Length: 230
Image (cartoon, rainbow, N blue to C red; front, side, top):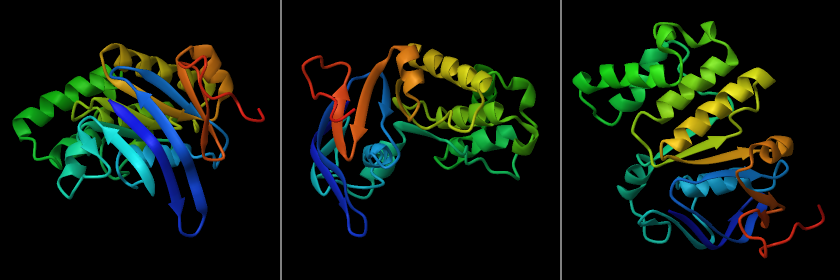
């Protein structure tokens, strides 16, 4: 489903962010992407949803390739992806239901579809009773659940979560992880970036570790790249 083939990414000001990274993520997988700050995790995620393009090599998501994608291919790709961030990125002046509805409105979904779907999504993430609340009235864990509901609005094949538990306490972290497990069990692939190595060990999903721009460990490849200096 997602394939990196000898991908290098160089930024003009900061230099090499990724160096010769090759990896495959299959349909329906749950994958942790880990490594220290500045290792290249966020660059990998940006390459997946084509916010950035490789300097060398190819990123392929489904049948869309970074080498050949043109204007309308990018929004088509992004409709297959849901993205959740550490800082939630909710619209503070809109209710919970309006935040989730917004993701459907921008794709031109009819109002007859939006209302029932928003209700279903909020029930799925355990926030049906909070539909008319504003983000500031919610806990951090609840805000992240709203963000996840919004990311699921267009039925993505892949949910990308960039440090989704980084601002949460232990209890909220457990709740968000259980929700992500449930979403994965329903067939959506999950790619979750995290620097929390204890969490990755505890959960038992596939782990991709990057360090200094290189893929240094893949738990699915026993004979794959060894950890470098770790």
